[in-house]
Image (cartoon, rainbow, N blue to C red; front, side):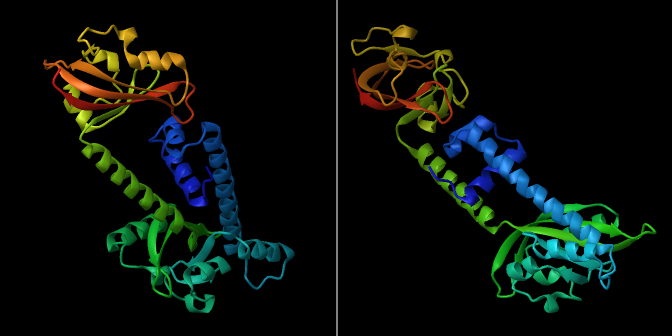
Length: 320
């Protein structure tokens, strides 16, 4: 599967958060963990390039703009070619420099921006308190990092990730503030679409009238819907072992099945992706009573998993 820039940025951002394991992300995006590591490495390289642009901007803000030195010309050239939006303000917060990427991103000409406060881009979605905390941090000599939902000159909205830092003069006083910003509109829209898709999937999955589970080769439940929890008489099935749920299974003749004789285990032993069995089984949950089920069991391979897993679909079959 070919993944676009937005999906890669979304995946690497979630890797940085560290809230989801690498294996889980690999399964979600349908790629190997090595591919995820490659995406992350590429993202880090871009981040270093932006950090380099920030260092250049810092050095530039310490130079006299009227200087004709070769060093200054090189610094200015690098700054003008930066893929990140860079704004330098004076100590009062008025813009004294904006690079071409600023013009491309916002639609404002440099001449329109000079002398203005960067809040000319505000959309109204960032509160006065947020701006107060930002100003407090940078006037206190600290770097501020955050995200803005800003408005372009034409009225359209865009997202950007920003790093704003104070720049000190030789006497140790704050002389300028510098913002290095990255347009992340496509990433934010992709993330919002992913959340909507995930929410829709979970809503549909939860509403299915029959039980659905995915069980890995070790017998651990990776996915289960509400109908499965009700059928088994056990809440929160995910991460539990199927053979630890105190369930009894009966064959079509009503004879109890040994754990190793369960069709799920038989299918896994074949080690063939896409195998499928359909049968009628009895289930006796911990709450008692026998439930006769039409059962479909199909092997599948989870993303980046070495062993097969199985999909179980269990539907009420009526009386014995």
